[in-house]
Image 1: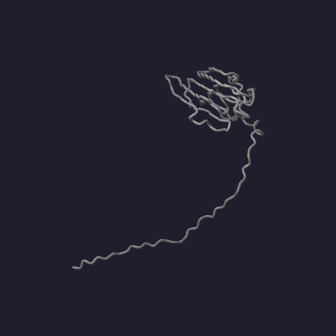
Image 2: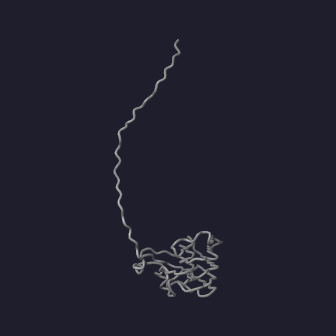
Length: 201
């Protein structure tokens, strides 16, 4: 009985027809810069209802602000060294209904430090013009307590319109019994900034 074995090579046919690829094209576009100074009067921004805020100007080494409204409490304390002239820093707080662009309305709570172009409250919300570093914050402590269960978040904005590096501040938020506590603190801020605050929505 023959024990011969046969090896067969299996070959499959592959369709080698090239399938067409749609041609693509590129086009160079020019993006023009936006001069916000020309449009600032049309911007429904932070100054929209800032007149309702409780506010105090930072004018000495120690400045404090306490605010209470409808179950929301805010306490701000700062220690600063003022070495020259420049934009004005304010401690501000507010809680209530806010209308955005005349369309959406939401309840918000705000507690923090903001920079304003000048001493007029109506100037706040416009970008300050920092010519030099003229205020040294050795300590900022912002503490809020609320009866409402809202989303809490830190609002930090440098003069370069960037967020603070996380290592420069501490943010803690949690519930204690029936109240919601939020703390935002920082020591030795050695640069100009526009906003350092707690927001709750």
